[in-house]
Amino acid sequence: MLRMRCPRCLRGKLFRGLMDMWERCPQCGFLFEREEGYFTGAMYASSIITLPLVFGIFLIGWLLSSKTLLAAEILLLVTAVVTLPLIPLIFRYSRTLWLYFDWHFGPDAETEGRSGTEDFRPH
Image (cartoon, rainbow, N blue to C red; front, side):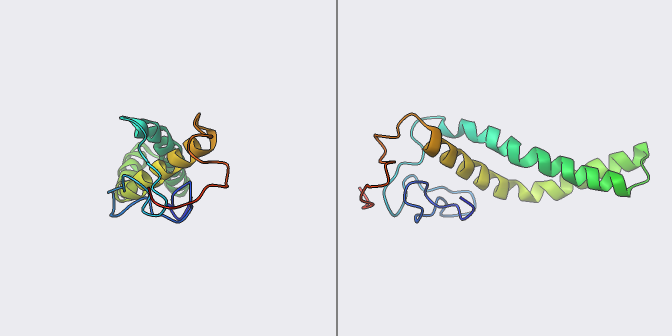
């Protein structure tokens, strides 16, 4: 998952650009977006990734600061500035996390070849 590869074959890349995702796995042909709005669930994954990061940055800054209202306001600004450039990376990992979650816990285990015995040729 950390390498952002297809959950089915573990070889095909999920992304062809910074935020441009393949429609199908280039190795095995697995369809990534099964239905319209499929990646809405990735917003939950994005929150799971982003919130601890933001709170961690803020907490470390707060512990190192003078703990005044001005320091808190400056710290909020610093936290936002540090987090904003990470949005493309968070976007990519949230989609990857959602794909892997759905792959392991989704309803179509039998129809998508999750038994581990399937042939990985593109369709």
